Image (tube, rainbow, N blue to C red):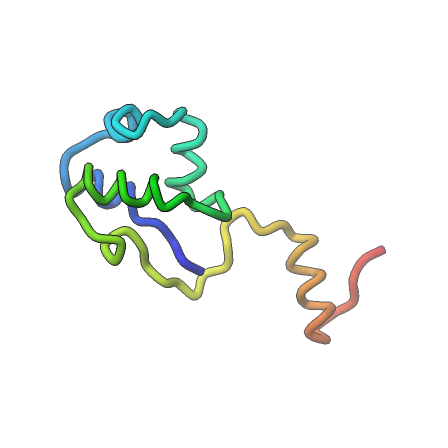
Length: 91
């Protein structure tokens, strides 16, 4: 899973979430979803703006992780297990 490291970059720079989402013109709720990897897509404009504001590159913003998505439901995992022959789906 690709994870965004925006919170780590903010800490390294001594900046707050509030500061960045105001710089981006984003709502606090949308920023929260972005920062907690609870979104399935990020526009190139937002990525470019984050990179410019935090003076970093796209490679600094992301890390590739083997961890499953944090918001993956139990039902989705059961469905995946059933497809892989690891169990039966509950009806």
